[in-house]
Image (cartoon, rainbow, N blue to C red; front, side, top):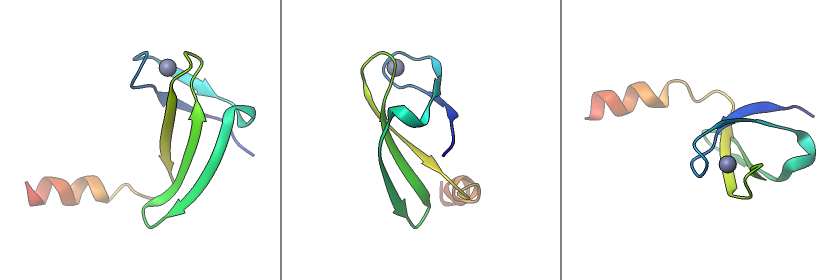
Length: 62
Ligand SMILES: [Zn+2]
Protein backbone atom coordinates (compact mmCIF):
# COMPACT_ATOMS: atom_id res chain seq x y z
CA UNK A 1 0.00 0.00 0.00
CA UNK A 2 1.00 3.63 -0.02
CA UNK A 3 0.54 6.90 1.79
CA UNK A 4 0.30 10.35 0.29
CA UNK A 5 -0.45 13.96 1.04
CA UNK A 6 -3.83 15.49 0.30
CA UNK A 7 -5.11 19.05 0.41
CA UNK A 8 -8.38 18.64 2.28
CA UNK A 9 -11.27 20.74 0.99
CA UNK A 10 -12.90 20.80 4.43
CA UNK A 11 -10.13 21.76 6.85
CA UNK A 12 -8.01 23.41 4.13
CA UNK A 13 -4.85 21.70 5.28
CA UNK A 14 -2.37 19.37 3.64
CA UNK A 15 -2.76 16.11 5.48
CA UNK A 16 -0.78 12.91 5.36
CA UNK A 17 -3.09 10.06 4.47
CA UNK A 18 -2.20 6.59 5.65
CA UNK A 19 -3.36 3.32 4.08
CA UNK A 20 -5.39 2.54 7.19
CA UNK A 21 -7.53 5.61 6.50
CA UNK A 22 -8.45 4.57 2.98
CA UNK A 23 -11.99 3.23 2.65
CA UNK A 24 -12.23 2.56 -1.04
CA UNK A 25 -10.31 2.53 -4.30
CA UNK A 26 -11.99 2.99 -7.68
CA UNK A 27 -10.25 2.73 -11.01
CA UNK A 28 -11.29 5.41 -13.50
CA UNK A 29 -10.09 6.48 -16.93
CA UNK A 30 -8.12 9.33 -15.37
CA UNK A 31 -6.41 7.18 -12.76
CA UNK A 32 -7.21 5.64 -9.42
CA UNK A 33 -9.73 7.42 -7.22
CA UNK A 34 -9.09 6.88 -3.53
CA UNK A 35 -11.80 7.53 -0.94
CA UNK A 36 -10.83 8.19 2.66
CA UNK A 37 -11.74 10.16 5.76
CA UNK A 38 -9.52 13.11 6.65
CA UNK A 39 -8.15 13.68 10.14
CA UNK A 40 -10.85 16.33 10.54
CA UNK A 41 -13.57 13.77 9.83
CA UNK A 42 -14.51 14.94 6.34
CA UNK A 43 -14.95 12.39 3.58
CA UNK A 44 -12.52 13.08 0.78
CA UNK A 45 -11.50 11.63 -2.54
CA UNK A 46 -8.16 11.95 -4.28
CA UNK A 47 -7.27 11.02 -7.83
CA UNK A 48 -4.02 9.16 -8.14
CA UNK A 49 -2.20 8.15 -11.28
CA UNK A 50 -1.22 9.65 -14.61
CA UNK A 51 -3.68 12.48 -15.12
CA UNK A 52 -1.18 15.30 -15.60
CA UNK A 53 -2.32 16.02 -19.16
CA UNK A 54 -5.97 16.61 -18.29
CA UNK A 55 -5.16 20.01 -16.82
CA UNK A 56 -3.55 21.15 -20.07
CA UNK A 57 -6.60 20.15 -22.05
CA UNK A 58 -8.82 22.22 -19.80
CA UNK A 59 -6.63 25.26 -20.41
CA UNK A 60 -6.94 24.81 -24.15
CA UNK A 61 -10.69 24.32 -23.99
CA UNK A 62 -11.11 27.46 -21.91
ZN1 LIG B 1 -9.67 17.68 6.57
